[in-house]
Length: 128
Ligand code: I3P
Image (tube, rainbow, N blue to C red; front, side, top):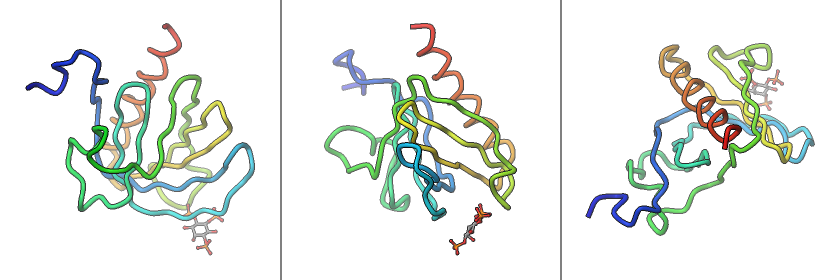
């Protein structure tokens, strides 16, 4: 049984470990609280899981494990945001609902790949 044998399972684009903090909720600023997060880009969503150690690449599947939160990428905005942190390699993701997240990695190539892939999903949704 292939993962998409029913033809309606959204495509897994990317998964990996990033540092994450939410900095706004519905436009209201939040206090930063950085923590490692297992991030999965699947279909139109970026899904965050809390405990990376207990996760596998198939964790995003319904029923496997419960995501901490999920972000709809339709209409979202992505910006490099090194001015918003003392850390390097930081970008900001803002949803249409005014939720803002910072995502970060110490590895330059890795964070660039994430930026590129998320932006391509945002662009694809805009064309739909
Ligand atoms: C914050 C914590 C964050 C830091 C943030 C601090 O302090 O050190 O790591 O963000 O800086 O306020 P606290 O733990 O007391 O909440 P960065 O690591 O992204 O720099 P900021 O207030 O300048 O955003």
